[in-house]
Length: 287
Image 1 (spheres, rainbow, N blue to C red):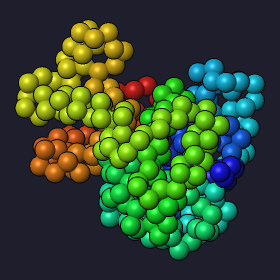
Image 2 (image 1 turned 180 degrees about the horizontal axis):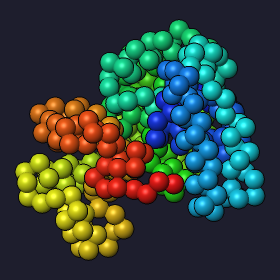
Image 3 (image 1 turned 30 degrees about the vertical axis):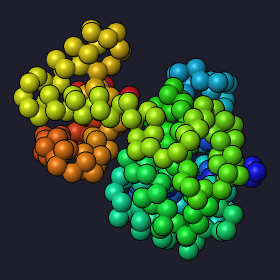
């Protein structure tokens, strides 16, 4: 079993930045990759914000200097070959678009050393949808994280029939060493465990909105009162991010088309992306 020490995270959006920072907080050498230096400058601000969040959350000694020290474990690169040159593990957190992922893995296969394990954080695509692009089917699997990783610390690990059991075990070990609860999934299942439960719930809320049954505030209020949950589905959408919600809806074909069109027209095109932009279905105070 390989002990993973050097990790590259592809994508510095909402979840990609959390994946990278969580690893860095637990002493892993992390390279954060994105497609431009301008995006990486924005990512640096996001990482600094995560340090503040970990301190405010009283996460595992964050206030004793660990949160700030974690930032020193992160390097940045907009050159893919450089970013993966020494990686034991590459975690891909690019948008939920199969063609984009295909292009990403075909480049990775050329640049990454033979030792490197590839992991996708895709929420909706199966590893077997992607494996043929990787050039190393025995060293490829899914490693799926939930948003607000420091609170919802599940790491769902799901291989294909071609994944080497030693590779699977190495990723389980990595997840546990970085403060996660490793969730070992025995065989491929679209949505893993978490999203197999969550997505139908969010889809039902989206259908109520699209059909004009009720507004987001009323739908959320009903769920909170009726179940005791602290948040409703549209509050969850805002945390996940409306770009992610849009991409997932598009991948659902005709079933998700109406909701995708609604959130693009009424929210995304107006810069309302959820918590990350300060406004989505709800408005959030500036931090």
